[in-house]
Figure 1 (tube, helix red, strand yellow):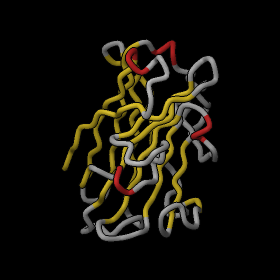
Figure 2 (cartoon, rainbow, N blue to C red):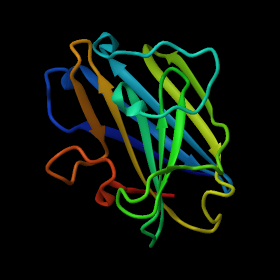
Figure 3 (cartoon, rainbow, N blue to C red):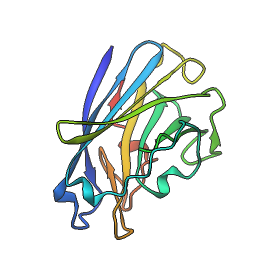
Length: 179
């Protein structure tokens, strides 16, 4: 298993960034991807969507607190976007190129997610099979990010790196972790 740890950085400081920390890890086996996001600090500064009774696919998860992962086969323009809500909802989209032809990825029918508290932090775990999504032998470039909604309605945008003049999680220069 290949595992990479990460720390996300806010795009701009809107007054809450110094009170929060977003870290985690991404792991890959031959046929599975595992994500772990850990939010520590003053969690009251974040709007946490209520947990759904069942995990299911939903659109527009990025409109509130949402954890994201971008997966791009090395040397390809195509990539996948994974959206994970703390409420158990999820989605995966396929793009043919930079923000081109977004469509829900039909090869993935279910995703396992878990939300819990560990050592005073909120932890979101997710895993899904890579079969049908990428060629097993391909190296994958990944970008990790999240949107955190705050009680006053503002949002902060967190990523490994912010290479553009505005928050842009799709920017390929932010796909920094290779698995």
